[in-house]
Image (cartoon, rainbow, N blue to C red; front, side, top):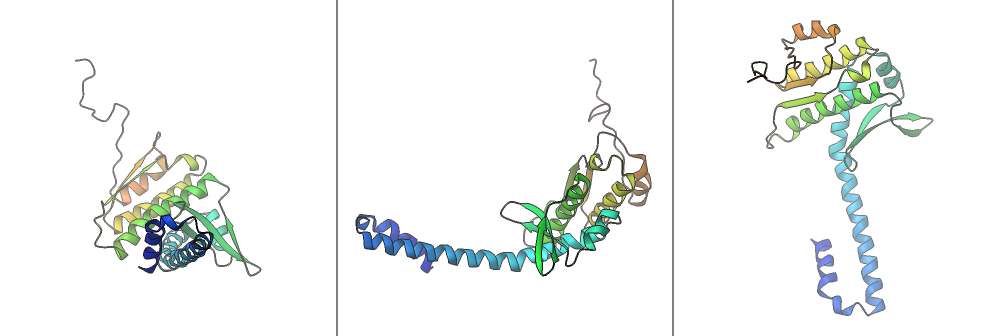
Length: 208
């Protein structure tokens, strides 16, 4: 409330802006206000985002692929969600220094994103149950980054299916081609393949 009062004073006393001393005083108070806001923002990041980071990282660790094993072998590895840029990055410790990085492959980045989508839904369900959530997740082109890595695609997809199944979330995965390697997952999770080769409505007659 004190910070708000300072801002209010800046506007209500605009007639005094010709006073250099008064302007200097306001500059100092504004700088202090910025520092206070930065402290509050950091507290939010530590208190809230750390929980989300853990969920995302745990989701990622459950994927059985070589590139996941490479990542989690790094000391103190975790995936961090940046709420300011609405993005994720990885970090680990090396010689007591925290190293931040982005993945070099599209497949790895896609896996991070899938774990983030499902992690956000899980976080909201566990920590903000007063917020209405649509139990629906749609992912477009999930298989494309794994064009030559069918096994990795299966493992990433299975984690998404498993999490959504546990949370009663309806998952739609849209692909330009059907990957026969995921047929066992379709059977396991009672999923359904829907072909759109003839459009969204297969009963629609094109020549009326």
